[in-house]
Length: 151
Image (tube, rainbow, N blue to C red; front, side, top):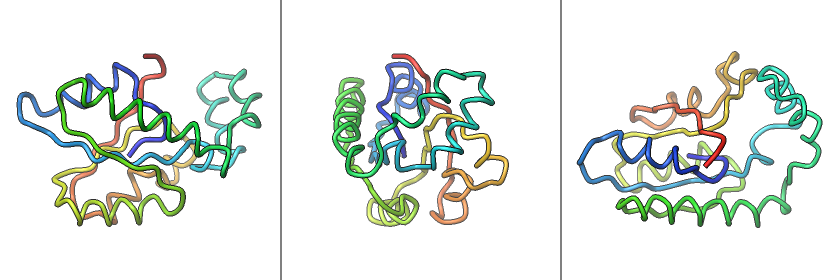
């Protein structure tokens, strides 16, 4: 489960987690604009010392405006995973990401879930982030990783 395009460092990291074992990735992407409200994102930016990012939170596409950039981020991520020699498929999700994750885990018989996101300190503090909530829902181990900001 991701919220933005995977960087080359992200791809290298997730594709090497299991050594030479063949891995298939089923990627769910919910655009960042749909993941949390602006205030929480701005607080996270301030906590990270990224004041310029906090000031630009109003520019983050939301709703229907986030679909185009989200589709592009998904295409880039899937191409990068395939380029690294892994099988990969995915889809954009708009509502209820954890419900979609639970359905996918059951459909494909997933062995584990990787949640790869930017830090969300407020949500993490209250255990309301995707990984914390998924651990109680999906029935398989959930690995939480922080994405790299640059490709």
